[in-house]
Image (cartoon, rainbow, N blue to C red; front, top):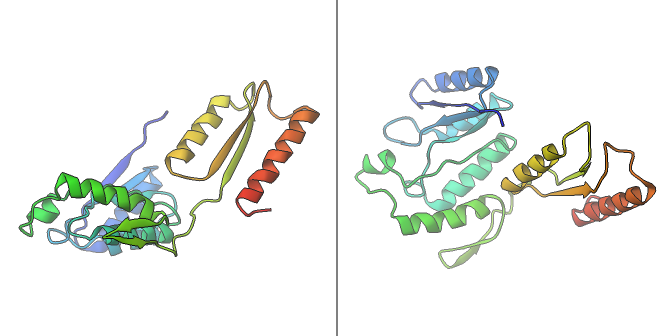
Length: 215
Protein backbone atom coordinates (compact mmCIF):
# COMPACT_ATOMS: atom_id res chain seq x y z
CA UNK A 1 0.00 0.00 0.00
CA UNK A 2 1.39 3.42 -0.98
CA UNK A 3 2.11 6.03 1.67
CA UNK A 4 -0.47 8.80 2.03
CA UNK A 5 0.22 12.34 3.18
CA UNK A 6 -1.66 15.03 5.04
CA UNK A 7 -1.03 18.63 6.00
CA UNK A 8 -2.00 20.50 9.18
CA UNK A 9 -2.74 24.22 8.91
CA UNK A 10 -3.12 26.59 11.87
CA UNK A 11 -6.50 28.38 11.94
CA UNK A 12 -4.80 31.76 12.22
CA UNK A 13 -6.20 34.87 10.55
CA UNK A 14 -6.67 35.65 7.81
CA UNK A 15 -8.94 32.62 7.47
CA UNK A 16 -8.56 32.72 3.69
CA UNK A 17 -4.96 31.54 4.07
CA UNK A 18 -6.04 28.21 5.57
CA UNK A 19 -8.36 27.64 2.63
CA UNK A 20 -5.61 28.53 0.14
CA UNK A 21 -3.16 26.11 1.75
CA UNK A 22 -5.72 23.29 1.85
CA UNK A 23 -6.44 23.89 -1.84
CA UNK A 24 -2.71 23.80 -2.59
CA UNK A 25 -2.38 20.52 -0.68
CA UNK A 26 -5.19 19.01 -2.73
CA UNK A 27 -3.55 20.10 -5.99
CA UNK A 28 -0.32 18.41 -4.92
CA UNK A 29 -2.03 15.12 -4.09
CA UNK A 30 -2.25 15.33 -0.31
CA UNK A 31 -5.01 13.08 1.00
CA UNK A 32 -5.77 14.87 4.29
CA UNK A 33 -6.12 18.49 5.37
CA UNK A 34 -6.18 18.96 9.14
CA UNK A 35 -6.50 21.94 11.45
CA UNK A 36 -6.52 22.51 15.22
CA UNK A 37 -9.43 23.01 17.60
CA UNK A 38 -8.28 25.40 20.32
CA UNK A 39 -10.88 28.11 20.03
CA UNK A 40 -9.13 30.76 22.16
CA UNK A 41 -5.57 30.26 20.98
CA UNK A 42 -6.69 30.47 17.34
CA UNK A 43 -9.82 31.23 15.36
CA UNK A 44 -12.81 28.93 15.75
CA UNK A 45 -12.07 26.44 12.98
CA UNK A 46 -15.42 24.74 12.35
CA UNK A 47 -16.80 27.41 10.00
CA UNK A 48 -13.41 27.58 8.29
CA UNK A 49 -13.55 23.84 7.65
CA UNK A 50 -16.97 24.31 6.07
CA UNK A 51 -15.51 26.94 3.75
CA UNK A 52 -12.55 24.67 2.96
CA UNK A 53 -14.96 21.85 2.11
CA UNK A 54 -16.83 24.10 -0.31
CA UNK A 55 -13.54 25.17 -1.93
CA UNK A 56 -12.15 21.63 -2.49
CA UNK A 57 -13.29 18.41 -4.13
CA UNK A 58 -11.22 15.41 -3.01
CA UNK A 59 -9.09 16.07 0.06
CA UNK A 60 -10.39 14.68 3.36
CA UNK A 61 -10.80 17.26 6.12
CA UNK A 62 -10.93 17.28 9.91
CA UNK A 63 -9.54 18.41 13.23
CA UNK A 64 -6.29 17.13 14.64
CA UNK A 65 -7.88 17.02 17.19
CA UNK A 66 -11.27 18.06 18.52
CA UNK A 67 -12.51 16.98 21.98
CA UNK A 68 -15.77 16.18 23.78
CA UNK A 69 -15.05 18.65 26.57
CA UNK A 70 -15.10 22.19 25.23
CA UNK A 71 -17.93 20.97 22.99
CA UNK A 72 -20.68 18.79 24.47
CA UNK A 73 -20.37 15.36 22.80
CA UNK A 74 -23.68 15.58 20.90
CA UNK A 75 -22.49 18.92 19.50
CA UNK A 76 -19.28 17.26 18.27
CA UNK A 77 -21.31 14.53 16.57
CA UNK A 78 -23.83 16.91 14.96
CA UNK A 79 -21.03 19.24 13.88
CA UNK A 80 -19.22 16.46 12.04
CA UNK A 81 -22.38 15.02 10.54
CA UNK A 82 -23.17 18.48 9.15
CA UNK A 83 -19.63 18.96 7.81
CA UNK A 84 -19.81 15.46 6.31
CA UNK A 85 -22.89 16.58 4.37
CA UNK A 86 -21.29 19.86 3.25
CA UNK A 87 -18.09 18.09 2.15
CA UNK A 88 -19.94 15.26 0.38
CA UNK A 89 -18.57 12.60 2.71
CA UNK A 90 -14.98 13.81 3.18
CA UNK A 91 -14.77 14.43 6.93
CA UNK A 92 -12.41 12.46 9.19
CA UNK A 93 -12.55 13.09 12.91
CA UNK A 94 -9.46 13.15 15.09
CA UNK A 95 -10.53 13.33 18.73
CA UNK A 96 -8.64 13.63 21.99
CA UNK A 97 -9.24 14.52 25.65
CA UNK A 98 -8.55 18.22 25.12
CA UNK A 99 -5.18 19.67 26.11
CA UNK A 100 -4.51 23.20 24.87
CA UNK A 101 -8.23 23.84 24.24
CA UNK A 102 -9.13 22.94 27.83
CA UNK A 103 -6.05 24.06 29.76
CA UNK A 104 -6.11 27.52 28.22
CA UNK A 105 -9.56 28.12 29.74
CA UNK A 106 -8.39 26.67 33.08
CA UNK A 107 -10.07 23.28 32.68
CA UNK A 108 -8.41 19.87 32.84
CA UNK A 109 -8.51 17.43 29.94
CA UNK A 110 -11.57 15.17 29.91
CA UNK A 111 -11.13 12.22 32.26
CA UNK A 112 -10.59 8.82 30.62
CA UNK A 113 -13.94 7.34 31.73
CA UNK A 114 -16.15 10.15 30.39
CA UNK A 115 -13.95 10.33 27.28
CA UNK A 116 -14.58 6.65 26.53
CA UNK A 117 -18.33 7.11 27.14
CA UNK A 118 -18.37 10.03 24.69
CA UNK A 119 -16.54 8.06 22.01
CA UNK A 120 -18.95 5.14 22.30
CA UNK A 121 -21.82 7.55 21.66
CA UNK A 122 -20.33 9.94 19.08
CA UNK A 123 -19.47 7.51 16.26
CA UNK A 124 -22.89 5.82 15.91
CA UNK A 125 -24.77 9.05 16.64
CA UNK A 126 -22.99 11.06 13.95
CA UNK A 127 -23.73 8.25 11.48
CA UNK A 128 -27.48 8.38 12.08
CA UNK A 129 -27.89 5.56 14.60
CA UNK A 130 -30.03 5.85 17.71
CA UNK A 131 -28.09 6.24 20.96
CA UNK A 132 -28.84 6.54 24.66
CA UNK A 133 -27.33 9.70 26.15
CA UNK A 134 -28.21 11.36 29.44
CA UNK A 135 -30.91 8.72 29.91
CA UNK A 136 -32.54 9.82 26.66
CA UNK A 137 -32.77 8.12 23.28
CA UNK A 138 -31.40 10.44 20.59
CA UNK A 139 -31.14 10.26 16.82
CA UNK A 140 -29.91 12.61 14.10
CA UNK A 141 -32.77 11.87 11.73
CA UNK A 142 -31.40 14.14 9.01
CA UNK A 143 -28.09 12.28 8.57
CA UNK A 144 -27.75 11.05 5.01
CA UNK A 145 -25.98 7.96 3.72
CA UNK A 146 -22.95 9.45 1.97
CA UNK A 147 -22.38 6.39 -0.22
CA UNK A 148 -24.82 3.95 -1.84
CA UNK A 149 -24.50 0.28 -0.91
CA UNK A 150 -21.77 -1.40 -2.97
CA UNK A 151 -21.87 -4.91 -4.44
CA UNK A 152 -18.60 -6.37 -5.74
CA UNK A 153 -18.49 -9.64 -7.70
CA UNK A 154 -15.15 -11.22 -8.56
CA UNK A 155 -13.66 -14.57 -9.39
CA UNK A 156 -10.77 -15.63 -7.19
CA UNK A 157 -8.86 -16.74 -10.31
CA UNK A 158 -9.19 -13.35 -12.04
CA UNK A 159 -6.04 -12.86 -14.16
CA UNK A 160 -6.86 -9.24 -15.09
CA UNK A 161 -7.80 -7.58 -11.79
CA UNK A 162 -6.02 -9.22 -8.82
CA UNK A 163 -8.52 -10.85 -6.50
CA UNK A 164 -6.76 -9.25 -3.52
CA UNK A 165 -7.83 -5.83 -4.82
CA UNK A 166 -11.45 -6.82 -4.28
CA UNK A 167 -10.65 -8.07 -0.79
CA UNK A 168 -8.88 -4.81 0.05
CA UNK A 169 -11.82 -2.76 -1.26
CA UNK A 170 -14.25 -4.78 0.84
CA UNK A 171 -12.11 -4.33 3.95
CA UNK A 172 -11.75 -0.57 3.36
CA UNK A 173 -15.52 -0.17 2.92
CA UNK A 174 -16.17 -2.20 6.05
CA UNK A 175 -13.83 0.04 8.08
CA UNK A 176 -15.90 3.07 7.10
CA UNK A 177 -19.20 1.28 7.85
CA UNK A 178 -20.23 1.49 4.18
CA UNK A 179 -22.88 -1.07 3.35
CA UNK A 180 -21.31 -3.53 0.96
CA UNK A 181 -21.25 -7.17 -0.13
CA UNK A 182 -18.27 -8.95 -1.69
CA UNK A 183 -19.30 -12.04 -3.65
CA UNK A 184 -16.49 -14.44 -4.56
CA UNK A 185 -16.89 -16.84 -7.47
CA UNK A 186 -14.61 -19.83 -6.66
CA UNK A 187 -12.35 -20.55 -9.61
CA UNK A 188 -13.94 -17.72 -11.58
CA UNK A 189 -11.94 -15.57 -13.96
CA UNK A 190 -12.51 -12.06 -15.28
CA UNK A 191 -16.15 -12.44 -16.24
CA UNK A 192 -17.19 -15.26 -18.59
CA UNK A 193 -18.92 -17.13 -15.79
CA UNK A 194 -20.81 -20.36 -16.37
CA UNK A 195 -24.58 -20.43 -16.77
CA UNK A 196 -25.00 -21.73 -13.21
CA UNK A 197 -22.68 -19.04 -11.85
CA UNK A 198 -24.58 -16.32 -13.73
CA UNK A 199 -27.89 -17.58 -12.34
CA UNK A 200 -26.50 -17.47 -8.83
CA UNK A 201 -25.04 -14.00 -9.41
CA UNK A 202 -28.38 -12.62 -10.66
CA UNK A 203 -30.11 -14.05 -7.61
CA UNK A 204 -27.58 -12.37 -5.29
CA UNK A 205 -27.95 -9.06 -7.16
CA UNK A 206 -31.76 -9.13 -6.90
CA UNK A 207 -31.62 -9.97 -3.19
CA UNK A 208 -29.06 -7.21 -2.58
CA UNK A 209 -31.20 -4.61 -4.37
CA UNK A 210 -34.32 -5.67 -2.48
CA UNK A 211 -32.53 -5.51 0.87
CA UNK A 212 -31.51 -1.92 0.22
CA UNK A 213 -34.77 -0.77 -1.34
CA UNK A 214 -33.26 -0.36 -4.79
CA UNK A 215 -35.29 -2.79 -6.85
